[in-house]
Structures are given as structure tokens and as C-alpha cells.
Amino acid sequence: MEFKKENLTPNQAKLKIANFCNYQERCQAEVKDKLYSYGLNTTDVNEVLAYTVSEGLVNEERFAILFAGGKFRQKKWGRLKIKRELKEKQISDYCIKKALLEIDDEKYIEHLESIAEKYSRTLKDKLNYIKNQKVMKHLLSKGYEMDLIQDYIKGLK
Image (cartoon, one colour):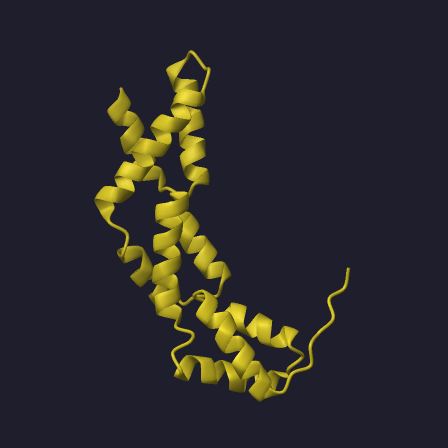
């Protein structure tokens, strides 16, 4: 199925993209993709993107902080997965670092432990080392750091 591109003028695009940005926090890459879907050329896309930044509709730092906090609280993602996703959205290293600093260390460890315990209860394995390997693999897939996972598993013994 092919989507038909809209052909909007830059002024029409500004109005439409303002609604797009007001609906939920967006990063520049998302806004740029949306502007191209409106049939704008590169010059117009850059002009409208500059408008969204100057009007405060798009703010990479604010986006990164909200994205990281949301994924951490809602999906219980670890810092590595959040960082990977933000990089994929072309967020700067500065904004990523700032966003990850917003995550409380105590809550981070609590999330790691609760995920590990919850997942561990679902496992049928009798041998602890197999169970621990599976828990470790699960926590790694959630984006938690290996050293924190190992510290948690050592604490179980």
C-alpha cells in the first residue's frame, strides 16, 4: 500500500506540524520525517524545522528527558536500551547524558530487582545457575548493565 504525499506550502506545514508537536513531545528527526511526508523540499523542511525549534515546539533536551523517564517508568527499560533508542532518534550525546542523569539510581536498582524477581518466578528450571543465566539474559534484553546484573545475582547466593 502506497501512501499519497500531501503537497503543502511551508505556511500550511507550519500549522499542521504545530498540531503534530503539541499532541506529544517530538524529536527533530520525527518532525523532519513528517515534513517530508507533506511533500516539502529540503529548503522548506529546514525552514519549518527552524521555526518549530525557535517557537519551542521541538526541544531535543526536553524530548530526551521525557522519553527516558517514560520508558524507564512505564516499560522499565534500562539505561542501555534507552540510550540506544535515543541514538536511533538522532539525539545528541549531551542530551542523552542529561536524560539518563534524571533517572534515580535507587529506583533503577529497584526496577532491576523487581523485573528479575518477577521473571525468575516464571521459570521452571530447578538448577540455580541456569535460572540465573536466564534472568541475566532477560535483564540484558531490557537494557540493564552487566555489572549491576552480576551484583544482583551475587547477592542471591
